[in-house]
Image (cartoon, rainbow, N blue to C red; front, side):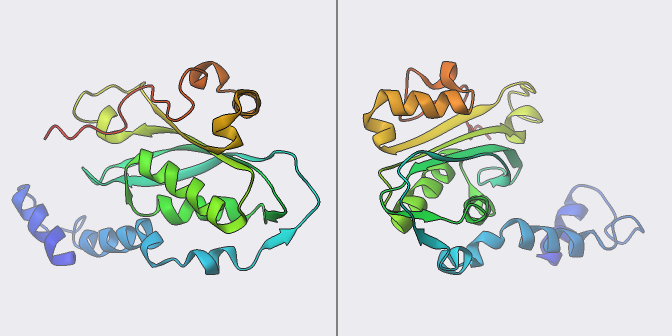
Length: 201
């Protein structure tokens, strides 16, 4: 990767050997290894058996989880908040594991729609809840700093499974608790205030 970055700098008309850029290829390689570290993560190791049998059947919500990811179309960041809820059947997952699951999938080249579904599917597969819901709100730099250059737009995506999809009252309770009820009321399967990423170049 370092050679690729050097060539890119040269193509841009820069001198990759000048003081400010001399170590840039090494820094970029290190940064991208971290930003894509989700590819090497093992979900079973991340969860680490933090699954517990509990007599609890009410909604569990972890909200305002910060996440950062890279748009797979332009390799530009998108970032925001993730809200996760589930209703247990007979098992719960350690609360700290939910942000870790978010990070595993966020630290890959992504589109927001797929990222949302991957988080929901993983929680479903691990604890077989009555229902699981994931809502993600994100700012996409591929929209705000290039292309359409809409700095104030953001994307909202949702994945609703089980009772969250089939029961409007449960779904609206969740959306009200994360303060997105007005946005998401009409389309429980997916809500988007704008396109997550448009490949126009």
